[in-house]
Image (cartoon, one colour):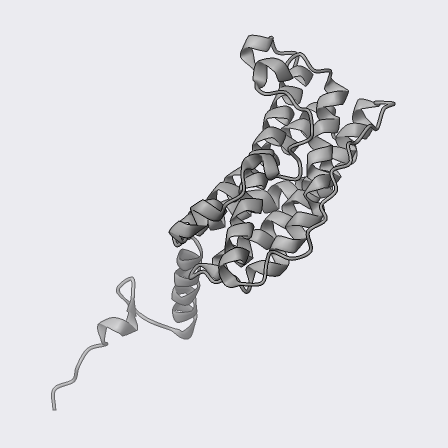
Length: 249
């Protein structure tokens, strides 16, 4: 009978495999698999970036004003991006009648707040006043975002699960930014804590599914505009803290 040599699978570097060499191969394969790049969607990259910023605010002792404002402006930018993404999700299946039913922007509950209209005006506003405006807007969205978070899971929309997840993320992150701006306020040493009261009296988005979807979209559009204002104010504050010339801001 013809004797067969060792199978290819039993050879390691041309030598007969031992249990130790088999274990070495298993370890090499495991390490190689761990180093494979992981694909990340736009939403997962955004979530990861925001999570890093939230952790940064959690370990804030000894951090300078410039770094605090850098973190705050990055987080506000992420919030605006997330609200834009949410708006796009809603627009993907929004009934035509909803465009007609949508309230005007002047109906937003924060529209009464007197704020700079553009960057040039913002550059003329004192730092403590700009910070108060940003904090007032954040505070004004505490209750509305809680309502949106409650209503999102039952929206009549095919992207309901995604909208629900992103809305809860918005709520968590705006709370984190609010806490971060408290640290900025204390670091700036301002003696004036003049926050504007912008009450929100709505406790329901409506009785029928279309009204609820339209009012959800309206509230989110109001937040998207306000998140852009907050982001602009914080970027001006960051620019001033870095002692940059106004034209560089």
